[in-house]
Every structure is written in C-alpha cells, then in structure tokens.
Image (cartoon, rainbow, N blue to C red; front, side, top):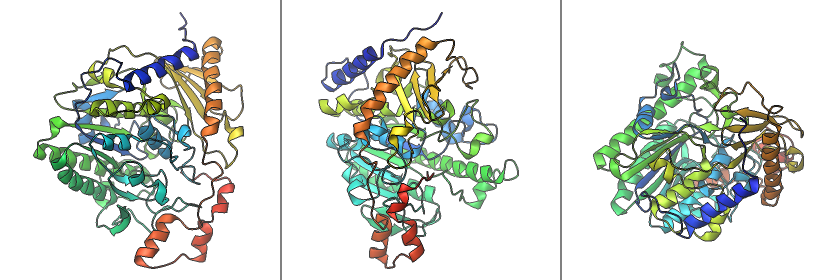
Length: 503
C-alpha cells in the first residue's frame, strides 16, 4: 500500500500551531520544561556520521563519543545542512538558514542577518551565562560577532577555518595555524599555546569553572577540527598511519584528539559534581569528508551534496538521571534545537519568534521515543550559487524530507526529481519517482512554495565586503603589520563576483 501524504498546507498549519501554542504556554508542558540544566553543545566541523566507532567505523576508535552515545538519547535520523555556516545558522535561529540570509560559507553570504533572534540571546535573557569557543563562521565583521548575538563570552577564530582568507569580509588572522593559534577573545586577540582543539576545550572548561558558580550556563564548543588543512599532532596521526591513506590517518587522528578532549570534559563535570545537572549535546555539522572512503554508514553522498550522507548527522543527548539511554527514530533536525533548549531552560519566547521557527521542541521524543510526532516537510539546499544567480539555482543540489521519503534533485534543471524511501533503502539505490508520482507531486509542490517564500530573505546576495578582512585589520592594529600586494588582491571583494568553490 502506498503511503498517503497530508496536504502541505495542513502540515504548515500544524507546525505553526505547535510553535505558537508552545510560545504562548497553551501546549502541554513536558516534564523537561523549566528544568534549567547547564547546557553544553559540542559541534564538530566536517566529521561525518560514520566517523565514530559507535556508528560502526571499522578503524577509528572514539571511546568518549561512544560513551555519550551509550549513556544518552541518540537520534537515528537527524537532519543538518550540507555545509557548515548554514547548519550553525539553523541551530541558532530554529529556522532554515536561507531565512536568515545564509546561503554560502564565504562572500558575505555566511553572515547571519542582524534581525535574526538567536538561541543564545533568549537563553541569556533567561539568566544563562553564554559562551562560544572555536568556530563561529556567521560573520567576521564586528557587527556580526557573537557578542552581538547573545554570547557573553567568545573565543573564536575567523573565517570557516583557521588561517583561511577569502575576498571581502571572511578571513582569519594573518598566517594563523592549527598549532598555537591566535584567537579573538572578547574583541582582542590572544596568542595561545598548543593544538587548536586542546586550546578551545581548555578555554571552555576554564570559563565553565567560573560560570558554574553564578548559575546555569550555555556553552558552545565548536572546534574547527577535523576540517582541512589536516594538521594534527604527530602522536595522533601515528594511531592510524599505515592502516588507511595518509589524509585519512591525519583526519582520524584529529577526531581521536577531539575524542580525548570530550573525555577530559566529562571528567571535569564529574569532579565538579555537575553530571546530573548538565545536558551535553554532541553533533557534527554536515556530511562526511575525508573518512567516507573508509566508512559512510552505508549512505550515499557526503558534505556538499543533498543525499542522506550529506545531511545526516549524529545527535547524542546525555543528561544522566533525566534522559534514559536509547534510540529515537522519528525525523528530527538542527532547527529543533532552539525550541527544545528554550523549553528546557524555561525561557520566554516571543510569539513573533516562534512564528518564524521551522523547528519544534524535541522534548516529547527525549522523554518518550514513541511519543506522537507528526510528519512535516524539511528542505535542504546546498546554496553556493554564483553571486547574484539565485534565480537559476532553484533545483540545484536540493532535497525535501517527509517521513521516510527524501525527494532529491542533484542536477540543475526542473523535472529531475528522484524519490527514495530511506527506511527501506538507506543507500538510495532505488528511485521510486515513477512508481509513486503522487508523492513526488506533493513534495515538489511544497518545495515550490518554499522557494518563493525564501526569496525575500536572501539579504546578503549582493553585499560587497571590505577590502581587508576585518580579523586581519584588527590583528595588524593590535600587533602591527600590513598586507602585502598579493594579500590585498586575495582579499579583493570584487573577486566574489567570479565563481568559486571555497567551503
């Protein structure tokens, strides 16, 4: 029997009603509401779903991530975006990234729209101390920094990766390195010592040690690892050298180092006596990269693609004594994190903010994985079209989810939709578009309406950035120095109008 879909309009109404009811206090309040735990969100960069031993990787060992998996709720079908800035925007706003102007990772199109209300803002208003440590990648200009988006403490590098430089505003401090990087701490650069992932976790732990004395805290730890360049301490690369190709050995070594830091964090929470008062969420930001050649959990696709392997992420929620360990099967997504955490924190959510959400609170599923969970449509689009060319990118690298179905357009023209049932065919080998045309029609109709809805939100499309990356300019002002002619050319904002593939 073919599964019938609800009409898209009814799904939209149901989702909106859910959000408004929760915001106005009319929805049934879950047993998690207002519990106000400390919240630690760990978000890794370019690690894939298959890049951990608890998901079946035959080479990589991640005992501390495995512990989070074993001791917490874990979502089996958790959707993120195909690249990094979009996922970060969706987490912090509860809505699709395009609705906040984020359609790329460079060229000013990674900037989170100033009018977006963030998770950190509302948690801070609810009495949480808020800090972010690692990668930001939602705007390097001062008006886009984390302190303008609700974070009381920030310790970040610029651009999408340490040492990167792109035309316009997106770029890190000059000549920065994964070893002893220069980091922007609350508006001033500090010179650090050690490997970048170790540095970020150390600073986060130090801040939490102080913050815990003054009430609940919300901490985002966002290492740039294991994103390229594949720079890693030699002892970690040695763990996998000779067993896998060199680039994979470095990549797995970066994850092993990250895993050790997760273990260090768990040990510190135990010393502080905060394990039962702290919710830890671990997730990755997009599909896999270097490691997919070794193991991709049987999925098709990777980072930068709309296939399941490009947008499925790990999502572990550990809260000892409150959330029993176990799997959660229904479809969930990064846009659900903001509504969930605000409910758990007992934060007041303005109705105007809730109306903009594409997400919903995961609290019912966290308490009971069998709880009623209405199906809904969720859209993925790679973005990354040439500057000013959104009109021609409607069907380029996009997908729609509804229940077990994924509707995929991996080409650039209309009429190329493919349909897959992920529960029956997780490797996406059987295109069902011809067998189930009514499913394709309804999912495609939703996508058409969504595409029209997001067009007015693309506020960064023609923005022109400064001639010098803001991080570099601030660095030179603090420590001295100036750009070379070659670097000025590399930062030239007019270059953004040529096609590029920077991630």
